[in-house]
Structure formats: structure tokens, C-alpha cells
Amino acid sequence: MGRRNPNIILIVIDALRAHNVTCYGYDKPTTPNICRIAERGVLFENAFSTTNATDPSLTSILSGFHPCTHGVVSHGELVDAAMVRLAQQVVYISQLLKRIGYRTLAIDWLGRWHRKGFDYYSGFLVKRSKLFLRIRSLLGLSSPLMIDDAKTILDVAISLLRDRVYQPKFMFIHFWNTHAPYFAPREYIERFSKYEYGTDLTIEDLMNKFASKKARKYIKARTFNTRNIDEVLRRYDASIAYTDEQIGKLMEFLETEGLIDNTYIIITSDHGESLLEHEIFFDHHGLYDVSIRVPLIITGPEIPSGLRVNHLVQHVDIVPTILEILGANINKGIFDGISLLKLLRSDREHEWRSFIVAVEGYAEKKVAIRTRYFKYIYSEPAYALC
Image (cartoon, rainbow, N blue to C red; front, side, top):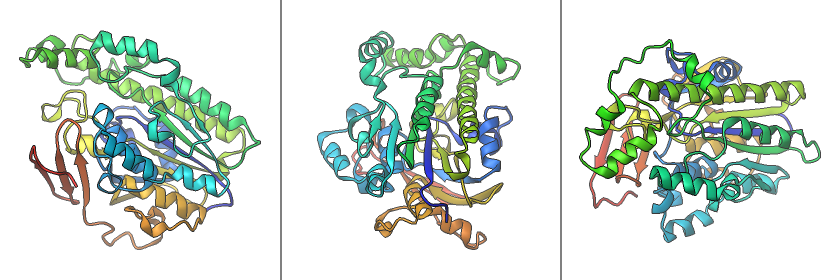
């Protein structure tokens, strides 16, 4: 399937839960551009991440392996030396595509093993480390507040796509505005002011629920400069809409430059977000659906238009899908995932995958097994995840 040497653009929108995407049934207009992309491609209604934190999730997205295979089961400062060694050994799609002549580009700041195989890696964190370490210190955050907003990321992406010398391209774009504390320009926040969110809790009321000074400081940081819960929920939606607009501009650029007909676009998120559910506030702890059910949309040459697929799929399916799109014979059978093109070609009335497994190894240690109709979450402090 697909054309010779197509471009591949993989877009990951951090902490975007499927629940707040309009074409997944949300009642507010957060994603008109993403929904238009879905209309020209395939929307997977039951797509799940392998975990609920960025480092292990991106490792799965870019490798096609589950955390229990690639070994990175935690995130950030809790990724120990053994996990780093395992992460360095896993092969990324960027490395595979370089072998067959692709120019590989990433607009992201995480660095470390996530840089593997990329000819260009933006590294915004390195450029602004002093500024964001200061913000982190002031707000008591364990990670930077914001690296670069969606417009800056889009500008870099377009400048790289304008270069026609190196073809074809694999581009990984990681948008961050949708991560707490949910940044968007004021005009986008005001756009959602007419909508009711149905809460009357103030941020002070919320912080008073916690006896721990550390917990209160944590809530304050994640609800930065807001007075009540409705403002936070409004800002989350605004951050989605702001990011969606940049994706729309990317599509306009691809169409204007005549690239759209030979470009595959994959849109997903690394994990979801719990806004109020399960007493988890503005974070992605837990293996509930709000934290692991993600959008997944694929469009491109010969991809069916306007198709909605309700089978269980997972992030590990992305790499095998890309390889089959390209017709690349690179030991495809070794991955934990399965090419989604097989699902589009076969009888969609029959069961595709009977269950998915997700793990958590950052805030807590948990394992979840999710079928179409049931979920079981196992939690025990001394439990070995994999």
C-alpha cells in the first residue's frame, strides 16, 4: 500500500485524551482541523497507549515494543541506569528509516535515547535550560513548565519541510501545550468562556482537600494562575484548540506545496489526562481510560476516507503500520504490534485483538488488562511490572 518514497509525519500531542477531541464525541469544538483530517482518513475509536507517562510511551510509539519488552517502565527522574541501558538497545523507527534513505527529523525536547536515529533533533530544552530550570524551581515542578509553544514548533516543522534537497522525510512532531498547566493564548481561552463545565470548586477548595504541603504546592503549580476548576478545564480545551489550529496550518502548507498527496500523517497522543476523574487532578496517574485512551488518526495515499474503526488498537501498532506502508522488509514480525493496514484490508466484523495491556511505573506500580467491555487493574507496591 502507498506510493514510492512518501513522507511520513508522526504528530504526538502530549496529554491529549480522546474524550476531549470533537470527532471522538466531545461536545465542544476543540479540534475542527483534526476532525477534517479524520474525515479524509481513518479514525481508531478504541486506541490505547501502553502506559501513562511520556518516556515509556514515546519509546513504545517509536519502537513498536511494549514497555515490558523495551524495559522503560518509568519516567523522568525515576528512569534508572538499567532502563537507560535497555532504552539505548531498542531500535527506533527513525533508525530503520534512515537505513532505507529517509531524512529523519524530530521537533522535541526530551533528548536522551529519544534522539536516536534522527538527523535533526530540535533540543529546545538545551537552548532554554536556565530559564526553564528557574520556572521549575519557582513552581516546585519536577519537570519544565513549557518548552516551546505550538506555533514555534509549527514554524520549525514548516522550515524543515521546505527543504526539498533531502527527500523523503520522516518527521516526528511533539506538541506540548496540552500538558499541565495547559498553555494557550488568551483569545483561545476566551473562545471557551461561553461553555459551562459544571463545577463550582475553587482552586483553594481543591488544595484544602490535601493535608500535605507538597500536594498543595503540586496542585497550585498545575493550576497556575487560575481561580477555579472551570478555568482549568477551559484552559485545557483552549490548549487543544490552539494546537489543533497549528495542525490545520501544517495541512494548508502541505496542500499549497503539493506535498499532501504523497504524505502520510499519523496523529496520536502519548497518554491521556485525568482532569477531575478518580480524584486525580490535572495529571495522568492511574490506568483509567481517561489516562490511556488516546486519539489515533491515520491519513495518506490509499488510506480509506471517513472510516471509523472500533477494534482495540495500541501504540505498538504504529511502527509496523509505517513499515507496511513503505513496503519495507525489516523483520516486521518481531514487533509487539501489528500493522493496522491489515485491519483495514480484512474483515472488520471479526475480533482484531481481544485485549490490551497497559502498565504504570512512575507514581505507582500497576498493570491493567482492558477488553472491549471490561478492565482489570492490578496494584501492589512490591509488584514487578513485567
